[in-house]
Length: 79
Image 1 (cartoon, rainbow, N blue to C red):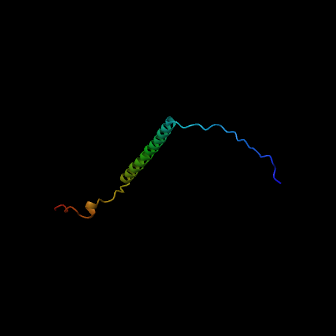
Image 2 (spheres, rainbow, N blue to C red):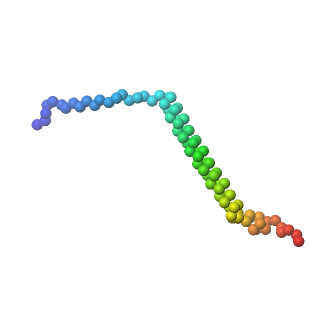
Image 3 (cartoon, helix red, strand yellow):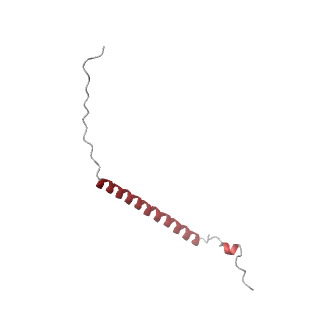
């Protein structure tokens, strides 16, 4: 036997806040700023690493022999 009275459940929730164009623009600018900051930091980090490697190679005389010298692209100096 089923009950004759239906069970009614009432869900109370706050109304959804509407998204305006200003919210979208502010969010896009925030994301763009975060990506720009990350690109600047990573670029500076990579530049610092490249400069550090160059200085390290100069300090310990680890520069490779240029291809022009190892392959004798130019004629040797005359005696």
